[in-house]
Image (cartoon, rainbow, N blue to C red):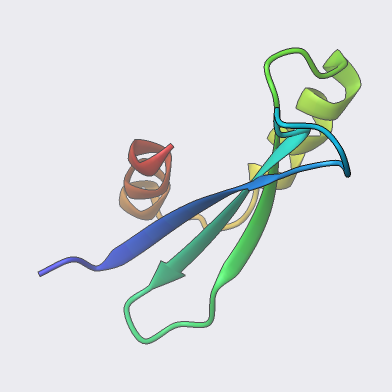
Length: 72
């Protein structure tokens, strides 16, 4: 039985086919969804730094951290 679920959705600018960001919707069993905006590979490094900083401190439980990162 899964304890968490991840859904990825592309965020597109009007008139563009390639997504400018990826939205990750992460839901733990019986928990409220958590939303993360993942930059695309060609995004400026500052956006990647902000994304990584947003991941720090979400949980102190190492197993929860590993489970989350495995979904990425």
